[in-house]
Amino acid sequence: MSAGRVAPSPQVPVKCLVWDLDNTLWQGILLEDETVTLPEAVLTTIRALDARGILQSVASKNDHETAWEQLHALGVAEFFVLPEIGWGVKSASVRRIAEQLGFAHSTIAFIDDQPAERAEVAFHLPDVRCYPAEQATRLSGLPEFTPATTTVDSQQRRRLYQAGFERAAERASFAGPDEDFLRSLELVLCVARASGAELSRVEELTLRTSQMNATGVHYPDAELRRLLTDPAHEVLVATLADRFGPHGAVGVLLVHKHREMWHLKLLATSCRVVSFGVGTVIVNWLVDQASRAGVHLVADFRPTDRNRIMEVAYRFAGFGEEECACHLVPADASPGVLRLHLTPAPRPAPTTMLVEAPDLAEREGMQPP
Amino acid sequence: MTTSSTGAATAQEIEQELSCHLEKRTKRSWAPEEDLFASGALSSLFAMELVVYLEKAFGVMIGGPDLRMENFRTVRAMSSMVLRLGGDAEEGGDA
Ligand SMILES: [Zn+2]
Image 1 (cartoon, rainbow over the protein chains, first blue to last red):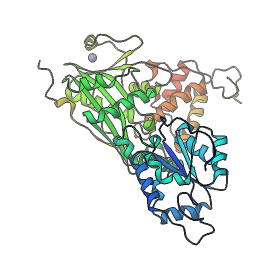
Image 2: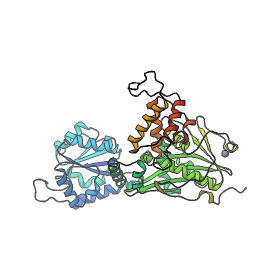
Image 3: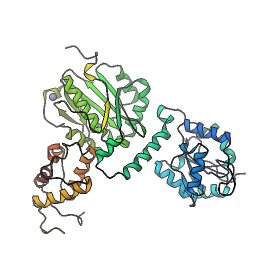
């Protein structure tokens, strides 16, 4: 049977499965046989893995156009990201797929009916787990293909990645100024008060996006959960979508509302959307809200070598280091954290995206005078 | 390749270099007093790029208090900030 190495620990979940085509995904050899067929059980596997948020790709030695047309004809082309169909060695294909996804080799799986192809991949990429074609219909029962949790975002993970690739391709071919391109995306930014369900996404954001975390302070899940019910705090989650599809949760804000001043304690935005100017749009929206509420704004900022773009966003929005009586309200600035201050004025809506957001000034939980 | 090897650039040299960069980057030309941000034509990421570009091209450090939009609003405003911060127009060659 499949001679070879012991697979790496099944504890490491597979994030992307790379399929061979001939006699693995479909039965038959495309360039030799009259027809190829897709077994029902293989289709079931593809659908099951997709629903679990496991990405799927292709590494096949074939004529690219013919094979890609065949995948369309079989109705499964949409399930595959970054297909590698050509005549190069498969280890190079798998390596490119991992690289473009930004995934470690230990999270990639490869399935092929040819022992020599599996050996070639295993030799060059020892961390990639290789499976013989006979196992195709049993993959969804294996622990490494069974993620512990399935979140809202994992169910649409493939869509997120595909939209990202389409966007990148479009951007590369777009010659006009940035904002024309942004407008062509038809971006919609939705800011909403966080509910319990969204908090797992929020925590993922504050953990993963250190680059854009302006405060450099992590708020653990339990702390944010506690503040959800505190009428003096606003915990807000921003999600972004465009005409290619959703980006998922892209930002989180924590605002402490004092009577004469709102204190922005946490603002983290995903690096994935920094080129869309989301940080600036959120800051300007908050400035406008504060202006309506008649309060000053104070924003915490801890400069690091990676978050200067947030400082640019704050400073260009008008935040500065001037003294103001409202500063005295929040005590306990941790060392190294700047308190940037702004006296708000109304701000026009952005021209690059539609913003849907609640009216913060109107919350009934505001402290009575 | 600059005419003076003594380092100190004139406002004119800086403005010329800057306009050239902006034209390449935005695919249109900008008059010295034209407001880059008024038309909504330039994004915040572009503002960040401008900061990095000015520091690299003219060897200046732009600190927090100088990161105000007024200092970046026009070619002329950027040029006077660079002069104030002691920039020179020597490109390439230096580390
Ligand atoms: Zn104040």
